[in-house]
Amino acid sequence: MILKVFNILGQEIQTLVNKTQVAGEYEISWNSGDLPSGLYVYRLQAGQSVEIRKMILPKIKEIVDKARGGFFAPFHK
Image 1: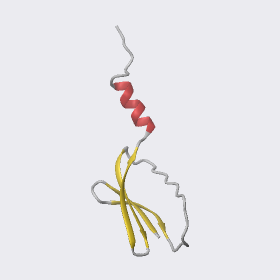
Image 2 (image 1 turned 180 degrees about the vertical axis):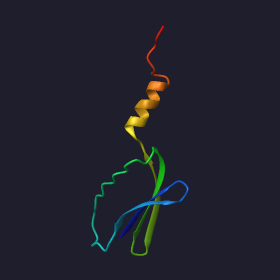
Image 3 (image 1 turned 30 degrees about the horizontal axis):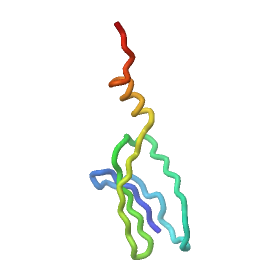
Image 4 (image 1 turned 135 degrees about the vertical axis):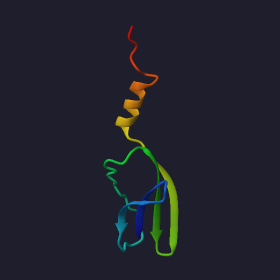
């Protein structure tokens, strides 16, 4: 099984799994580190089967910072 993450430009960001595994369900934790919020793509290959899906990476700190500077900014006279 091979599981890779790519940015929206198609550049590989990280390989999360690259090993032979028996059939079953697995859970993978991904530490996205300093990557910005945005749209990413993951590619999962198991044998001859390949799936490519989009995912959104939200960074809570970025969301809160944008909210404070935008609509939810405190009102000052």
